[in-house]
Image (spheres, rainbow, N blue to C red):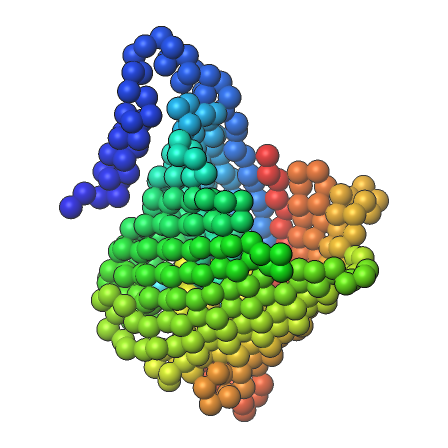
Amino acid sequence: MRSWGQRSGLGVGMALAMAAPGLTHAGDLGVLGGALSESKPIFDARLRYEDVDQTPLAEEADAETLRLRLGFETGKAWNTTFLAEGEVITELAGHYRDDAARARDLSYPVVPDPESEEINRLQLVNTSLPGTTMTLGRQRINLDDQRFVGAVAWRQNEQTFDAVRIVNKPTSALTLDATYLNQVNRIFGRESPQGRYHGDGVLANAAYQFGFGKLSAFGYWLDFDHLNGVPAALDPMRVSSETFGTRLAGERPLSKLKMAYAATFARQSDYGSNPLSFDLDYYSVELTGTYRQYSLTLGQEVMEGNGTVGFSTPLATMHKFHGWADKFLTTPANGIDDKYVSVGYLAKGVAMLDTLSATVVYRDFESERLSQDLGDEVDLQLQAKYRRFVGLLKVALYEAHEGQTPAAYQDTTKFWAQLEYVW
């Protein structure tokens, strides 16, 4: 069996051969030269400090890291562009554990931003067919609100996919999106035992834009290989699943108030080589009202559990959900019921800043099955943008309720200070 590198290399060669059958002709060389001359650089630098204090660990983690992304994207030649992007993550200072799958530095909390150097994206994008975009190679994929598939942009090393993706728009209102993937490049980096998921995955998503909002239907089939060298709870075989669902998201003005709404329902069962057996549901509802610079959000997200395993979303941008302390990246065996309220403020043109925003979120957690108390969390964020610079201060305060919350979940405080520049 060919490796992904062999298959992607073969695919790139075939794509170029189909796109440019007469590359030796002077006219074709001119087209290629024109595409190269229209190349755009990619540059992204992010400096971050993260501090984690987690009960009952003896040490407090602090990590100062720098991420650099460098690359380019060509102009079009034969309706095809080429993008290459490398990534380097360097530890500048600190003491922390960078990988939960490694039995070292166990007295420190985990900050999953390991040092690494790797190819972040390497892709060909072709638009030869009307209304159709085909992407081949290592790529970033974000679907809907990223609850099921996302790039995990919050971490220094984002999640990418070795995949073939086809997006077709038969009409302006309808979007059909299909992906086949055989490798997931996770946030832990290629040196980690859990840095890659291998296997077969199919992501199908169809969305239609109505006047009242966008209605999506999706089906995700994931069959991951067994991963040696990781605890059983981290084995990707255990999250092999088939998931079907639908989502509605839209907004409507009400005088001076703008109302946004979203609702999702999904059902998940075991699939492929998964040794477990389950049939679990997911649903979420969210309502946001915005008045001038102020916003208020009320929401609830429920993931069922059967006592052995909970509804899972292994490809999601999970930091967006269930609190920024990341206590529930793995859904509890009895599931989770997350009720939350968020207050936001956004102002433009404050002093020399382009934008200034502040967010406060309160979450109350309990298990979906048995209604166990899982604690609560307060999240705070202040963000400012000036031209291409974005500065961020962020705090997550998770508190277990003594005598009620299971021992696996204990008090955790996280703090971040970050500065990013994107070209």
